[in-house]
Length: 98
Image (cartoon, rainbow, N blue to C red):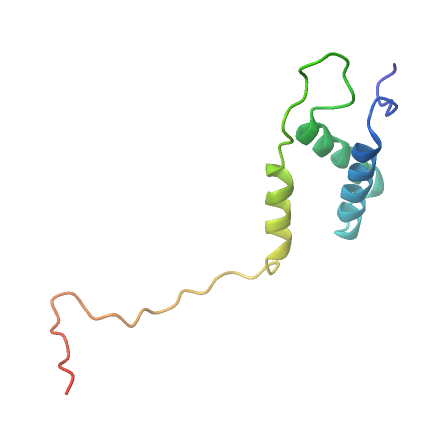
């Protein structure tokens, strides 16, 4: 098997990589870079292609996907403005309610 051969990947992994690559391209990443990043993400999450032998079933690690989803959902380029808190000053007296 040569490097870059995708025959050992499952259909699900191939679909995931395709979807991830599309997302990168929508954000302006060149197609070639998007594809390599997508496969890197799939490898990180699932541990690469199919492997023979029993006891190899491991949980999928989705931390990278969650992080990307959270980043993408935020308003891009906007900084949070400091808000003034209307709390009382230290040592100040509490207002009496009548």
